[in-house]
Length: 522
Image (cartoon, rainbow, N blue to C red):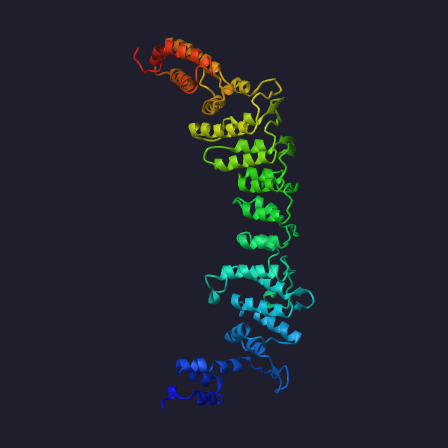
């Protein structure tokens, strides 16, 4: 009879006389023996083992799990946790086992998950009457963003996140920072730990951060060297709208402001919403508005301590520019109106010793001169903003302190006979694209074109064709003529009577203008 063909009874009887190493070699003989001897392996794994001579008499025994931990038998610890119900009954022994398993040698995600399940069956163990084991494990998990190389697996982040959620939700682990003590019960606690809160330390781990916020992590900093977490997120250069939203859901107040003692060179003063808009964190601003951030007129102080009026709607409109995410800005403006922002509110500014009332429409058509931009694209984008304001009730007939309406204010900054100003070009585009004939400055453009033709003829008598003045006035005439063509090609004569006069003027002067623009020779 060959060795692999031995009867099962004989194999099992032989196994009783073998030590562990010999039993393992026997099981490797063939696959049948591996299945047959499984019960014998299990019985040997769970049996109590002799205690060490330093702790008890030679005849004393300790649970297999405790023995495996003392001997650093990692594989046996894993097996006992996953396959058996064994666990030290003595409370002190339980704490010692937990200490060893939670140490760096054993801190492996599957093992810790099984430990949490085992300890939960018997109730979370209190450590020295202060902190429960679930909290200790939670804080160790938070400190270990990455698994140790020898245990590293691709699914570690997902398993870590699930275990953190279990500890927080099921076992009520404390998500706040533990007091750092050098002589703590756990070995990992003997190292110096940063005083930063767990929310600050998990900003780059959004899912973990949101779990902590949802389960009551402190948002108010207890350290004078650290800002509150919401303030920290708002002052970052990279936007963290998801995390801000999580804090707001957890009860953060959206109407707080930058502390008065904040260094002036580090940040913008004022409410959270102003900070978010200034940094162009528009999704963060949306979250603040959705959770109740004020959209009303308020007073703020500048760096010099001078007070000025501030309105969030005006602030957003003033920042709209080419190259920026215009649709996000427009979504934010629409959100303002859904939360009852007043489209016709004025802010009062003082310039050169006189007060000026500023309307949102005025800001929408204000040209940005502090940076280079594509003028055509800038006009198109500003026209979208202007149309959005008008669609939500902005009133172009609202008067400023001098009694001027919106169109009159646009015209007031224009030099007669010059190129049509930026504001009027924006207004023209909105008026023609959306049929707002009440905003169409046709008479103004017609008179301006007539004046430009006369100025051109006068200058031409004194200057040469290459003179800069000739070049400039020619461009002004071209722009004004283009506006007249735009009006004729867009409006209907029966709906807009001035169109007939525009047509008559262009018909009578088209040859003269063509000559002035060098389209036809003299």
